[in-house]
Length: 78
Image (cartoon, rainbow, N blue to C red):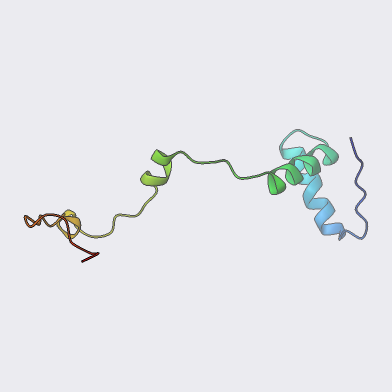
């Protein structure tokens, strides 16, 4: 594994890291690794069902009704 050294960090930020680490029962170094992993990992791919469920409710069902055309398929190449 590689090592990462970060210099010039504001003391208030370091203190916040220590407090967050203590709240999670980890060392500051372990907390730093977790923060980096969460920030840089790829987002989880969502299933089609999750994507559809997240769509907002826009309009009434009647707005999306299919219009029945009894004349057959349109003749677009004539």
